[in-house]
Image 1: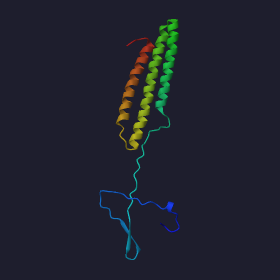
Image 2 (image 1 turned 180 degrees about the vertical axis):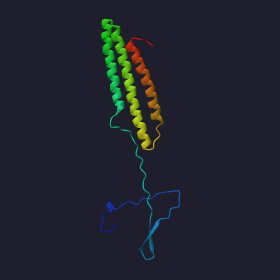
Image 3 (image 1 turned 60 degrees about the horizontal axis):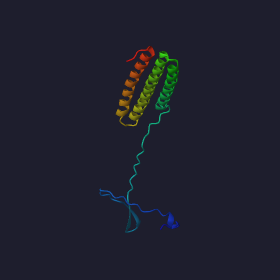
Image 4 (image 1 turned 90 degrees about the vertical axis):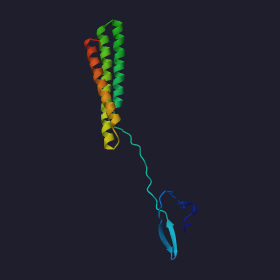
Length: 154
């Protein structure tokens, strides 16, 4: 026990078991006596990194999908009631356009994530692949929306 300290505040002795032969630092307490103090290693703490952008384009892509599907539903209902092919074409075009916008916004999210991953030293292959597939899907959806607007079918 240390002089002047209550027993509950005394630090506990900790031991580190290693495979290596570690020589403890020796300190002279009294002439002829030595006290061993083990060398403590700095603990390593792994912090999981999460990508949190200022503007989350993935959330905006969900909004674009919801708006497009809502507009599709409204135009489809009015198109069926009035038996109008023009409104049905607009409905299909609005739906495909919303998918294209959502895909491009998701590609923007993946671009930001890939840049962030490279800046922190993580591999960015998955984000780059997702970005490429989103761009391809967005182009296909935009073409279908354009043809639906013209009244052509694929």
